[in-house]
Amino acid sequence: MTDLDKFIDNIDKNNLIIPFGRITHISSTTIKAVGIEVAVGDIVKIESQHHLYTVLGMIASVESDGFKIVPFSFIEGFRINDKVFLQKDGLTVKSGYGLLGRVVNALGEPIDKKGKVKDLEQNSAINKLSIPALERGIIDERFSTGVKAIDSMLTSGKGQKVGIFAGSGVGKSTLMGMIVKGCEAQIKVVALIGERGREIPEFIHYNLNNNLENTIIIAATSDESALMRKYGAFTAMAIAEFFRDKGHDVLLMMDSVTRFAMAQREIGLSIGEPPVSRGYPPSVFALLPQLMERAGNTELGSITAFFTVLVDGDDMNDPIADQSRSILDGHIVLTRELTEQGQYPPIDLLRSASRVMDKVVSPEHYNGFLKLKRVLSLIKENEILIRVGAYKQGMDKELDDALAKREKIKTFLFQGTSEKYDFNQIFNQFMEVIK
Image 1 (cartoon, rainbow, N blue to C red):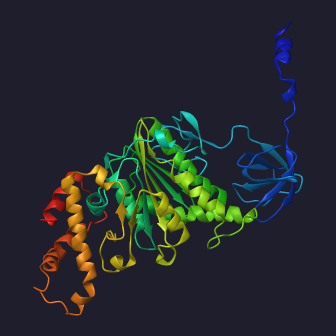
Image 2 (spheres, rainbow, N blue to C red):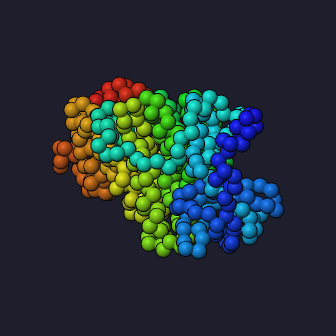
Image 3 (cartoon, rainbow, N blue to C red):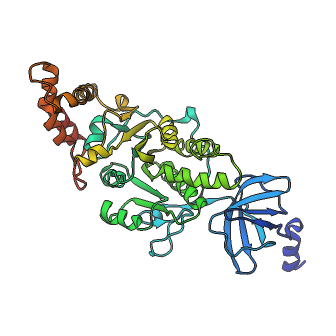
């Protein structure tokens, strides 16, 4: 028997024909097709016979007479009877140390004009189950951000999930840059989801000072398809999980959850889901914990995640803000009022909370936190009386002591965007303030 005969005998005769489906209907946001067996979440390749190009799509719904596809790009150029092929390996992103210092899109492809990404080790599945509850590590180790207001009063732990809630133009991106530059994480993964195109280079230039050392940026801008904006967040999480499983402490910073939810709203409404809360379909509220719960501790490493939430009209009861707060382990609220007063970062400490702070700081630090919070609460409660002159010194000794510390507290909490402190410096300053 010749080598050619052996080669022919080894061919799987059942796979000589590649099955494909065909497009039967095209709408403004979805494509309907028939002809192959698929499941919701499967990835397909759509091939345009006329324009000779292909795009990826995701199966969004399956019916008895076909299935609906949401494409990763736009649908211009496709025609009835164009072919649809099932991608057997699903949706993956190539991960490795070569990604450090690079800017990639939602599929992990480089967009920074630095050439092909090298030193990629494995294909990581973008869609994964979160860490099983009983396999999660206890959050009992401090995570320093380098931001005085956070490390002193809202101390985070390794593996914690924290929300940064703010209206537009209040200072989320600036605070994000301060955390990325000042935190103690070994690897930093930043997902910019649904942002304006100009904000990507501006964030790198102004907020990160063009320093992408140990940092990876995943960008899915507002002009990209809803599916790219949705999966940009999952790609960032998959890359963070790769480095966590290599034994690193990883910072995941995502801006913003709101635009991620809006992308899923577009997808859900396009396939016929009913709007249930301010136009958001049920799939949005199911998707948020699927993403956020993937952060956390394992025996190998940790992912500490900060998710920004764009609060609609500064309304903290916005459905996305409300749902996010219920999933996260802490929330940092930025207010327009403090921004207008020139206080930066404009963190409202009385409306913010870290649910793990008492587990990661010393009793001395925690008692100081309670003391300072009491001082801030007293000043807030009596602010109107003080402003109109109705309160006179000596009427309340506790309030007098609080007012005496007000300027010292304000000076301590103020931090310039280029200032960076380690945790011991912050702790020492904090203890001086509360004396």
